[in-house]
Structures are given as structure tokens and as C-alpha cells.
Length: 562
Image 1 (cartoon, rainbow, N blue to C red):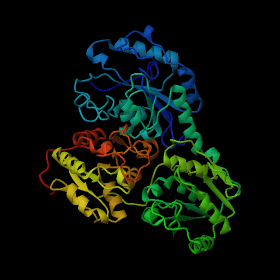
Image 2: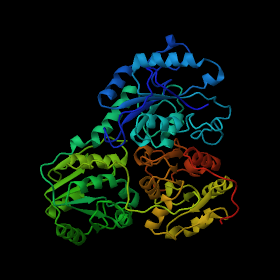
Image 3: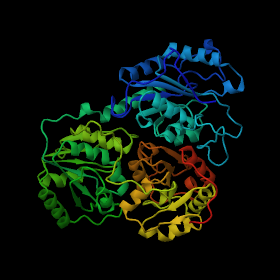
Image 4: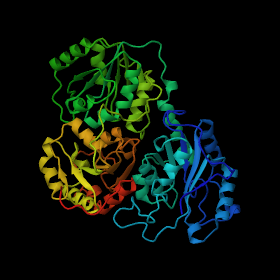
């Protein structure tokens, strides 16, 4: 029995807006029903028992007033179990539509919830009815709702009250906002990309994200000839700044990028960059050299020689832009924009502030908008690279076991078991890593995977990831490469930093690992907990389930690397 598409007003539920139209980030918001829009009454077939949560109608009307379309995505196994009839279900939904609507689409999974829905080992990736693509945590309802509304999942937000809602959102490539109830498990709250207290808070967050990057903020009096953009950090940091750099490039004649040695190769792949200045900054580098007056003088002269009239300084939330702003003032740069909670005095002309928890690409885009730069029409706020398509051939899965930060790497023995499990499920598995990770990759690949450790420059790695059905990786640069080329990610995410800020952006993902581990939000570079429990307990079979959830087919077992 397929998922049901229901419009209680008799229409088809088809949408009006299409991708690239309307709001910058989001076209639609999709809500779970029971526990999110209305109080949960188990297997309710009686419209008289429908009670909206506090403030629901007002919150939904704010979204409608902002031009967003609304839908409902709901599991209703009570239909298959015989607790209510299809007519009862329609009457309950019609009552919700009467009280809170109109909704632009209803997407319903009527299938049973099997007893083995939650396999042991990782509650983040429940199983589901064999052959059912719609029952959350599967992404089918979200995908179908986006299609019915004439948009794509990446331009949708899913609001729900349990982990299955967030997993379905991620596996479809949509944003997710969790509104917990007393029934929500602590591990589901910890793993969610965003958590708010109630439906009003969810709407506040969605509209705030829209406003931060909205083109209405990006107004200027004149077009600058040359602008410097700075992100002197690692490759992953450079990649997530890409949409903001494209926005600057759309409003300037020439873009000069200041980056560090660790980000140079990534900077060369970013559209919109005309010139690169590579320099190690001791107030940014994780292993900094001493601050040297002669070196700072040379940097000042080098930046003055670029001829830029203004600069936009991108940083992570824990970094300060003010030292570089001082150098740029000494270099004669007339207009400088940056995010700064610290008082900047006369160092900044545009002092921007961003609340915590905003995804890094949007944080950077909001600074570009505050500085007067917007993405041009038709350029979606997604990561993008100068790269070709991946290799043709049978689909494969890439496992990237290394990480630039040791605390974020899955233990080698567990990665080796993951490769074996994937190969045993019929996947062709490629293992990638940098020149210093040859031994690691050889161990992880074993006889079940194909070892490419140390054999790929960054452009080659991009092409390999672009051709993959999925990437299995920690919170490190290749996760953002995958987002830039549209490859789904199984994210083995250590909770040392916020998943909502640093997780794969606007691409299908499934998060695995213990989000409640003691290292949570410590920003540790080396694991502070014996045994690395956040990732050492990831079950290899849960990775296989996650790859299946994001739509990667598998055949029979593969013997050897081939």
C-alpha cells in the first residue's frame, strides 16, 4: 500500500512555488502531526479528541504570512492495525485542517510499525516495514511533500517531536527542528540538528534563519572593484564559506582570498575566487608560531599590494577577526566587515552578530549580506566547487577514516569493521585518506575494501566522492566536499562541536554516534574520554542501515577488493 497523499479540501496538494523562487533558504515547512501540531492521542480516530498544542495556529499563520507553504508528514500505523478506518483518519485530519489550516499538502504513511523497528546498537537508525519507503525515519514522506509543493527537500524544514522526524528530514536532505515533549528521549534531543522549546520557538528560528541571509539585507551604494575575503583556516572551514564568497563575487569586480596553508587546496576549488593570498596567521592556526613584527609587516605590505578597497572577514564562532582587521587597517583597507561580539572600536565598519547554532554556511552568508553582498538570482545557498562529475560505473560507497582533528575520528578498528559490513551487504567500498594516512587506510580497507589512501590529490578526491552513492566520514573536510557535490553522508559525528553548525549542509545525511557522550560541546581536539565512546560504539550494521536509508542500493556480498 503506497503512502497516501491527502488534501481534505479536495485538491491535489500541488504546490505553487518552485526551486529557486520565493524565500532564500526555505519554501516550505513540514510538520509531524501527533505531539507536534496536536496533543498525542494514541491511535486517534475521533475528531472530537483533537487538541492543538498551545500557540499552534498563531505560529503557523506567521509562516504563511512570510510566504512559506505548510505540509504535514505523519506515520499512521493505526490504519494498518485496524484501530481506525480510512474515513476516521480523514475526519481527524480535516478537523486539524479546520483548526490549524489550511495545509498545502498531507503526506501519510499508513503502514504497520513492526516489532523490530528499533534494532539494537543505534536508536538513531530504526528499521522499518520491509519495502516501505515512507514510514519515518525513511525519507519518503518528506520527499513526496516537497514534490507536491513544487520544491525540493533542501528548501524544506521538518518540525517534529522525536528522533524519527529528524532522521527522516536528514535522510531527505531537509533541515530539521526538534520540539521535544516528555516522551522525547534524551539521546534524540542531543542528536537533533536544532532544538527549541515549543512551536513558537521553531517558527522564530526558521524566520530568523530566513532573515539573516535574506537579500533584503544586502543593499549597497556602489560596486567595489576589489574585495578581500578571508578564511585562514582548514579545508572544511574554507568549503563551508563558499556560498558567502560567491555572494561577494556577485557584487565585486575581483575577489582576493586570504587563506592558510591548510585551506589552500580547498580555496582553489571555490567558484568566485580570482586570486589567493596564502599566509599562516598565528591568532588562527592550531599550532601557531610566535607573533613576529617583521612577519606582520610583510603581511601588511602583501595585503596592501592586492589593491582591495574593502574586506569581509569570515571566522568560526570561537575566533576573533579583530587582529586581522587591525592589519588590514594598516594596509589601507577602507571598509571592513566581520562578526564580532567583542567591541571593535574603529577596526570594523560593519560589526555583525549571529546567534549560536546557525549552520556555518548561513553564518557566513549572513555576514556577506550584512556587508551588502547577496547571491545572484538562481544561485542556491548550497556548497559548490569547480569540479567535474565523478567516475562512471557501478555505484560505490566511500569510507574516509581520517580526520584533521583526532577527537573527531572513528577508531580504526571500528572503521575496518564498517568496511567489512558494507562489503558484506554487497557494496563496493573505496577507502580514502591523505598522504599521512596510508597506513590507516590500508588497515581499514583490509581485503574487503579498495585502498586509495594517499593516492588522491584534493581534485581527485572530489571526483571520487562525487561519483559515490554515499560517503561514510567523521566531522572533517570530505564531509563538506560531499555536500558540495551532492553526495549523501553517513556522518560519524563526534559531539565535541554542534552538529547543527557543522553537520553536512543541505545534502541527505544520517548521523551516527553517541551525541550524549561526555565530550559533548568541549571543542576538544584530542578525545578527553577513555575509549572514545562517542564513536567506538557505532554498530557496523547501523552504517549499512544508514546507507540504505539514504537510498544506496546493494547487491549480494562482494568477494575481495576486485
